[in-house]
Image (cartoon, rainbow, N blue to C red; front, side, top):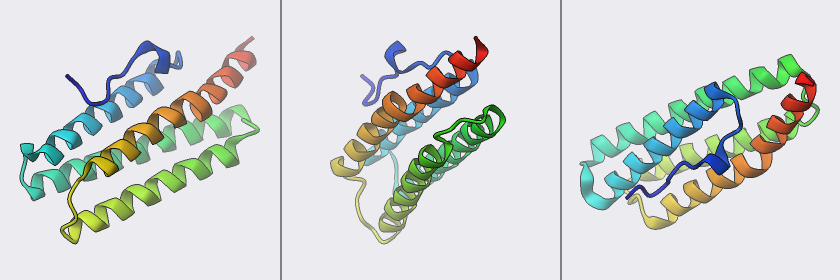
Length: 133
């Protein structure tokens, strides 16, 4: 059973964004497997890097959409992106100093991503649908 199951309640209706979200969820599951002894530290470090890369690429996609659409809450939404990437890099630095990938880290990431999608991303999706008419 996946630690983080993507569900239709998290879909935004934009196939590119939904696909990116599902990829992030899959990588979070890979990270959980690492934290449960499914890989050595180097393998887990690679998964952390993949998660950071996927999230950065996804945030860049969203922020481009904000720019093109004139999304009025773009600054606040982008600030949330910066906060999460900063926290993810901090966690990666702690891991590099031999901190474990504990349950606290996994729960933080799962809760943050879910809350971000349900609040910030859903608000943008509603704005985008309204603009389309």
